Amino acid sequence: ATGRVLFRAATFEDITERRLVELRLRRSEELLRAVVDTSPHILCVKDVESRILLANAAVASFYGLSTDDIIGRIQSELHAEKGHDSEEIKKWLRDDLYVIETGESFETVETITDRFGQTKILQTDKFPIDLQDDLRGVLVISQDITARRQAELEIQTLNSELERRVAERTSQMEEANKGLQIANSELEAFSYSVSHDLRAPLRGIDSFTRIVMDEYAPSLDAEAQRLLTIV
Image (cartoon, rainbow, N blue to C red; front, side):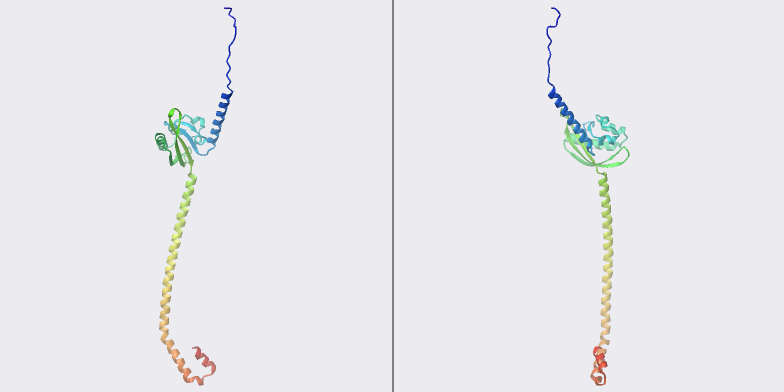
C-alpha cells in the first residue's frame, strides 16, 4: 500500500423538491397563524391535560402574555398564576373533558373574568379534534357577546316599560269609558224624566192654544194667529 488516495466517492441528493415542500408548509403555517390571530374570537386547542397546544392572540391577550408564552402551558396553572377565578376554569375543564371523552360537540354560554376584573359573557363552542398518536383534544371557539346581551337586556327593559305604560293607558281609557257610559246613562235618565214631566204641561198648552184659535181667531190679527199656530 502506498497510502495514496486512489479515488473519492461522493453522493448527491436533489433536495429541491423537499425544500419546496418545506417552504410551502412554512407558508401554510404562517397563513394559518395569520388567520387565527386575525379572528377577534378566543380560539385554542387543548389536550386532555388542558395543555394549550394552539392559541391565538385573543387568548394571549386575555392572560396578558404572548402566544409563545402560553403554548405548552397547562391552562389551569396559567389561570391560577394570573389570579383568575378558579371556579370558572373548573367548569371549562369539565366541559373540555366531556368533549374529549364523548367525541361530541358542546355549546354553552359562560362567564369569564378578564385580567382587569371585568366579567364578560361568552358564547362558546367546543369540538373534538384528533391529535397525534390517536389522541383526542378539544378545539375551543368563544365569542364575546357581552354587548349583545346588554343590548338585549336594555330592549327587554324598554319593552317591559312600554307594556307597563300601554297597560296603564288602557286602564285609564277603560275608566274614562266607564265614566262616559255612566254620564250617558244619567243623561238618558234625565232626558226621559224631563220628557215625562213636561208631557202634561205641553198637552195643556196645546189644548189652550187650540181653544183660543177656535173661539177667538176672528178677533186676532194675522201676527197673533201666526204665533199661536207656531205654539
